[in-house]
Image (cartoon, rainbow, N blue to C red; front, top):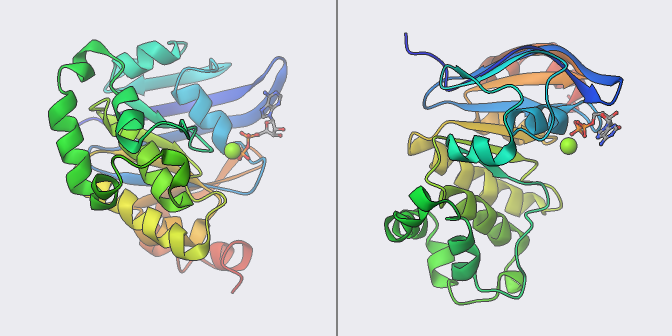
Length: 238
Ligand SMILES: Nc1ncnc2c1ncn2[C@@H]1O[C@H](COP(=O)(O)OP(=O)(O)O)[C@@H](O)[C@H]1O
Ligand SMILES: [Mg+2]
């Protein structure tokens, strides 16, 4: 069996002396779309911050492609092939879609593949190609989220992590964005998707981890979790 692209191995995470995530482990295998779900304040973003190098684990280890990266800085994680779609999209509203995408190719290795990356992204998201010269701020929330994902793909990453891409979108747009994320995963790129929208994540992901108050209370194949009594009661309103 090949090794996971990402392993989070028994980490404690927090801020200053405050621990907010306890003994948490997770792995993402090559080609997998993995969900990390839980309510507000459960620790999802903290896990992503540790993976992308914004905070250092207090305990435990993080490995990317088999190499320990605990304590690596965000730019080092990017150089190692990790791309991050931040919460709130963070686009430049008064720049075109095209210009926003080009900003994603900020590393030399990515810059040299700029044109082929752009072509791939426009192929994956025809809506973005149509709107390439539109100001990013004029697009719908769903299209803006696709720009944010496209910008991360411009890094030609080996793994993608995303923080709440459905935030603030209408249910119809959430469906569109989730379908886009599945399309990206189907290109073979491993993805860790953090979301509060449990129902949508379970419908597109291969496996899912559930965090409550900083602890992993449940994980497994998403298809099986859809029928799990705890999930149905706590998250699906059934
Ligand atoms: N910069 C910070 N300093 C101190 N506490 C924080 C900070 N960021 C988040 N927290 C706390 O950590 C816990 C988990 O937060 P977070 O990871 O943002 O949860 P989620 O993304 O699941 O909503 C919360 O109790 C939150 O108040
Ligand atoms: Mg969060």
